Image 1 (cartoon, rainbow, N blue to C red):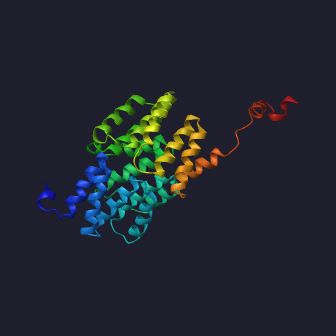
Image 2 (cartoon, rainbow, N blue to C red; image 1 turned 135 degrees about the horizontal axis):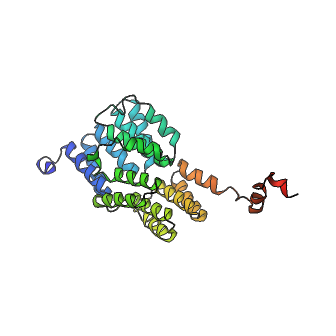
Length: 283
């Protein structure tokens, strides 16, 4: 309605772009953000929305490179810090994510940004499989926020770590009521299947993730990690290399390639060393 009444109204374009983004209609969101940026090139909300959509459409590195100088200028700082932290988490750069989130003393006291801050802090813990840390932040989230599909996925991931797969699936069902195309929802379903021992179903979900229309190195690296956890290093290496070819700075992909290249331990040697007295005990 606002766009019909005033088609050059920047705020209405950005507001509608957020709705499209949450629904997974990234093309429409990106088009509206581009129009808003033309009308108001230096609008703070428009700048942040552009970084957000870059991160979701395979240009996470570009989002990082645009957010760093933005934060240094103290514009929209807390929201930009949360967004930059999330971008680093997607890259697998957890140390930088932690440093960025710690750089603001008002992150959790800012009422306009509190839910986002809690969400990103939880995501940092989830990425490192720290269920207790994630739970601490998620329990403070305002229940009215639980229509956000990204946040619903976070709750699902917490349930997966806690091995409550039924609750996790319910959160993902709710997320899909809003966003039917997110590969990150599908990736969480793959993790549930893998955790329940259904590797075949997990692989089917991962293959669906890889049909995502955007060439997203963060998604490829995340799928590579899922394959490593499945015990399929060959597929993991292939996807990590694919991610690395697009973005050589993706630490998650680099760590997978590094770990996958390590020789597997010799089973006989492992068995000998596990006996009392170590490897020489049989002599």
